[in-house]
Amino acid sequence: MISTLSASSAIEVRDLAKSYRNIEAVRGVSFDVRRGEIVGLLGPNGAGKTTILQTLLGTLTPTSGTIRFFGLDFAGNRESILARVNFSSTYVSLPYSLTVRENLGIFARLYGAAEPGKRVQDVLDRLDLADLADRYASHLSSGQMTRVCLAKALINDPEVLLLDEPTASLDPDMADRVRKTLVGLRRDRNTAILVTSHNMREIEALCDRILFLHVGRIIMEGPPREITARFGDADLETLFLRVAREGRG
Image 1 (cartoon, one colour):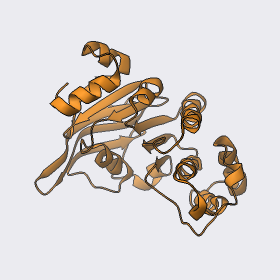
Image 2: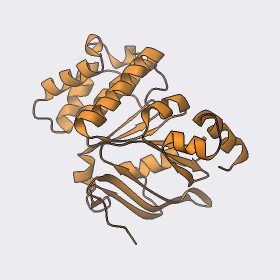
Image 3: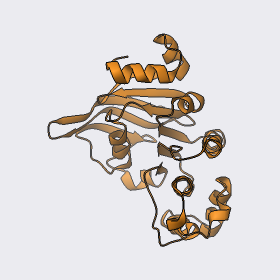
Image 4: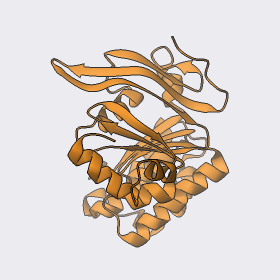
């Protein structure tokens, strides 16, 4: 039975499961992400993080369970919901034969931006990418491509932002700028952000809550400091290592 969605909720997941033949990648996961909240989705490789993100994006169909965005059932309102959502990952690239501005311009038109050129310039400026605007994507470093993909994810001014390792390839200065951008989106736009990362210090500094996955299940949930205090660990990285190695919270 699906609970009533709070007016402040952006995402509601209930009893989500995904199996591949005899492999259960996600096993009965339930959680919410409120508007204006940054939530970290954590766990060792193979815990189910990417599978959950893909089901939220509609690129994977759940075996069972329900997903709702903004109070709407995802299965029945996919197109209208995805117009209000976006995604960025360190592991995604853009067409190499186009410049940064051309790539972003295509997405601005696909997303139906009222003034595509102005919107592209806005996100270029927000992420300090103006000096790369006319460079071909094939000439970008991995860190520069990561920032361009994040810029792409901001083109439609999303109400929900799904991020997979958004700072993994960035140097410390640029990673700090990206984190400040995300905090600014939460503050100024009330954006709901669900982020995966293996950088535990980043998660501690950035996230209001964390969802810790292990073999497809959420085994702990709450503010980072509360969770580490509850389990008697010095910091989130120590807790992560213990769970990854011992398989328990």
